[in-house]
Figure 1 (tube, rainbow, N blue to C red):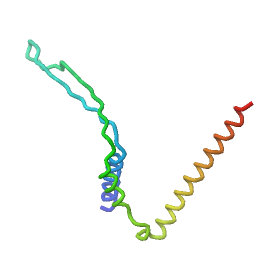
Figure 2 (cartoon, rainbow, N blue to C red):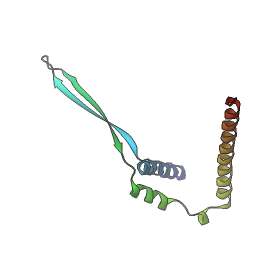
Figure 3 (cartoon, rainbow, N blue to C red):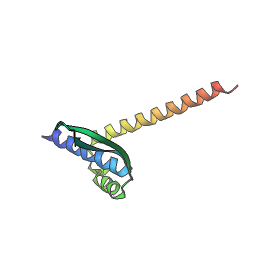
Figure 4 (cartoon, rainbow, N blue to C red):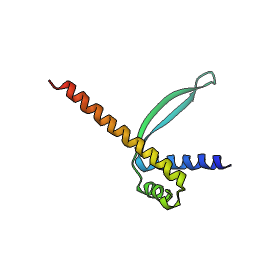
Length: 107
């Protein structure tokens, strides 16, 4: 039961994040007509891509749903610390790689 609630919560957070950041949506309109023999066939198909702008209300709700740090357990804090440290390490490695590539390219 707890796993189902977590999955639903993750789905909600993902949907809110998508809405908060904005996205492109594909809209498909199909028109069918009957041919002379009584069969229904696709006669027109129109595909439109619409941009949905970022939504401030969704962003606000997303920020309000975040758990305050004071509510985290020690294990959760340690896990978050490790995750953030890994992101920092990856960022530093990427910067070093870019610097090394530029040094190799410069004559």
